[in-house]
Image 1 (tube, rainbow, N blue to C red):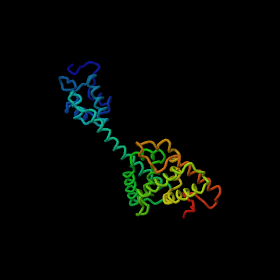
Image 2: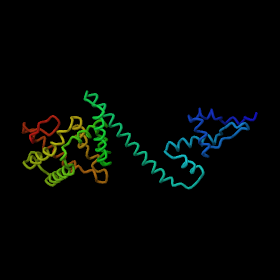
Image 3: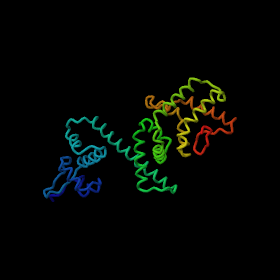
Image 4: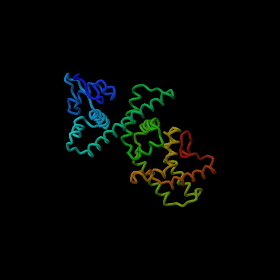
Length: 281
């Protein structure tokens, strides 16, 4: 019989079942010179062990993002800068992953709004997406890697909304400069007794700087922020020194001790925090 081949060969129907590819895809790969099936006298295609391995290679290389022409060059042994090619593929995959993260954040925040029975029409949802995109574009990669540890996608989307609601004259660079100045002056003054007059003046300055941001926090955002700064030792040295909130962990620990000392002696004092009525109002 002219269609007889060794037992280890597969016809196109069996190969489709084995690989999950369509017969059309297999014929297309053959037309591009990627596959070379055996042919019977009647023209039926049969695939041996080498061709089955070739099909698996095509599947793997395509899953890595290589085009068919690039795969063909590899199979033909032609010179191809595989290092540059794979770096380019990684960049593309990183961009796709970032877009997926954005989509997850948008959906998670929308669901959180719905769960709180807050209105979410098309216009509001679009506004939230635009606000979130602006914030994510402005957030440096090094900071994103840190904040992702302490805030869920829904919380980060809520951050984006609250950020968009800040007054038009809010200047984040000027605010960062104020924190850096205050953090530097506290650092230079240490060691200090937490209940000293100098320390308590620093508490007043800290609370006044914190108030505008704290007023827009939800309790969940506040808790995440506190966890993040309590864990500064695990991230402040990342990003080649670029992660600088304006103060270090020593200053953070000291200001918390000084605030605790104030609260122990001044019942009228309250920390600028969600739901708190600060004495700095």
